[in-house]
Image (cartoon, rainbow, N blue to C red):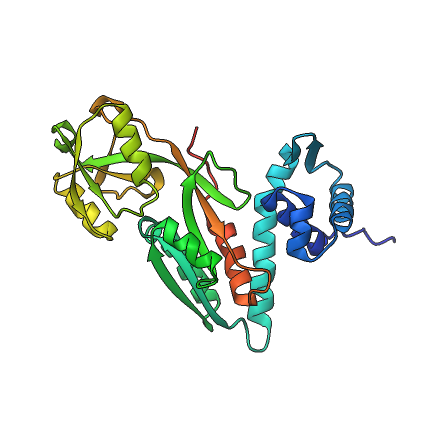
Amino acid sequence: MKEPMINVLDLNLVRTFVSVAERGGMTTAGNALHLTQSAVSQQIKRLEEALGTALFIRDRKGIRLTRAGERLRGKAVRLLSLNDEILAEMSVNGLSGSIRVGVPLDLVGNMLSAILKAFVEAHPHVEVSLVSGSSTDLKKLVQGGAIDLAIVEELSSVPAANCLGVERLVWAGARHGRAYRRKPLPVSMVSESCAFRPIVIEALDKAARDWRTVFENVSMEATAATTRADLAVSVWLEAFVPDDLEILDAECDVPRLPSFAINLYGPSRNAAAAARSFEAHLRAGFPRERRAS
């Protein structure tokens, strides 16, 4: 009796697909993978033939994912992450080394903590160090090679192939609080280098809303405490608003704020395996739902 044919995805093709999807082009993906543009194009064609569907739309505007490509993207990232984890765990010594990761002050907790914990548990021989700061400062650090990766908050209107997700920037206040009613509006800011600061000030000026700074300190805990005590209002990405704070809507006479992308910078082409593995783990674990709509 004839043995049934077993279909197996070529992980090299899948890795090329993910690189093209995240970098938005064949040439940039080829540079990252040390392949020619022609080789990348051929690998994508082979993957499309194996799956029996087109994964990219190519036109004068460039290249973008089809619906099938969008469905494959998340699963492909998880597949590669699992593959890398298996290889690392089953090798004699496992994955080892050290990684320095830059994380904005407001993203350290919540869902990111769970992602970091899962990676450390899977790779006990990898030392992960966190560097907290403003997105502006972290981007400079990763571009200068001082850290391996940086999670950076940037306006979503700036296109980025390295986007982990998009969140609305919202106002928050104490539950049943009255700070938003005060004039001038008391606002708690983190620091002058905060990525949100110029956007918030511009929105308040356009709305002709008088405001004053209540507290400035490079500490999200202090900002949350000030807001919790109903001394001021503050701004957060929607998914990261502390549970004991309340999101303020337009009825509270606060101006609407734009959406921000959470972008990942690094690692470099010559980065160690630990950094590359962490990047894959982060992409696989970070929620990709977009709340910008």
